[in-house]
Image 1: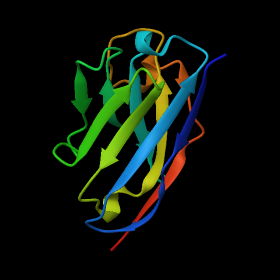
Image 2: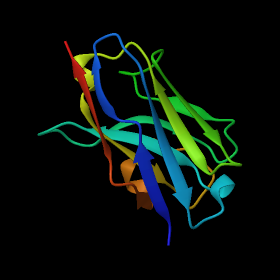
Image 3: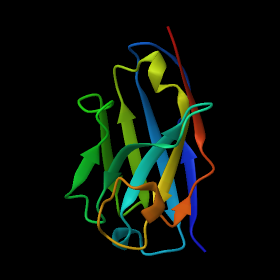
Image 4: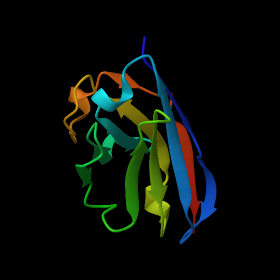
Length: 124
């Protein structure tokens, strides 16, 4: 059984930075593309970023391009999301997700496993 555990969320002022981590277990990590999604109250789950199993392919949602960076350390079974220049609109619960395939995807429905989420709150 795959487990994904996020950490690193919290309260930050606008313009600040946070780094989210997601530790994975239960599957060969390098065979799994990983993604970050977020969901604000009353809104649908939104694609933030994804990375292929090898780390060679990354994609970003339009609202975070140039501010967020996804990376992974396959030796540590961990994926990261570095978030800079945070805005109040970035406030949401952030979820880590994993696929059973190596190809990166921005589609929620293509992910098989999900973490419990970590709250990110950006104050103005």
